[in-house]
Image (cartoon, rainbow, N blue to C red; front, side, top):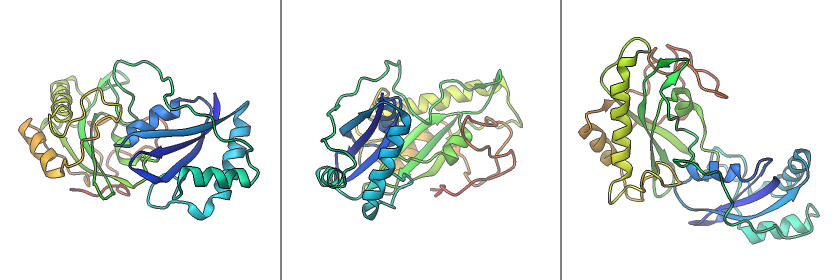
Length: 273
């Protein structure tokens, strides 16, 4: 379904995100992995084509340009409440009705909730590559933390949390001590250890949301980087230096992400703990 959507963050009613999606509600599923808090679907406007929703979104963004939010990597966030935004959109003549309600979009059934950073396989072109435990932190008053196990190396460095109303940075990573020069099936044991450690962290009674939480890997409010580090070290993992050049034992490239070459670095969104 082709829609222009208005999304919100349950704890920040003064902020909204307005975008378009030609395969709604796939965008809603994506959004939940970017945000530690509940995502609100304020409403949607449905259209017949992708060209229509792109044109409508562009007009809406222009009408709300003075409210554009800059404290995020997403370009579609605005510092204005839902009802005030809709009033301005309607008064601008862009639409003539309130958006339709779609508060519980029907999403694809999966064994595990969808996440933009997670990949269930450490295989790439039939070779086994290194899986790391990645730690991200939201630049918000709560300093919320997302912990992810993934072999997607370039994605974890470069892919932006565009559906989060705050900047989110890569701040730490942990891995098994076996560090070969290239891919090898011998890394499989360490990769399993990394995934097991993630499961322990997100299952913690106090800070863990659970392995099947839709806000995948986002820890509960109050979890600290020191606590995550302590758990990772207890699992037998060691710190990974995020500033070091890309090694040959990690996945060489990810889809739709500009490749970091082996021996290269990309530190624009890294704030190392």
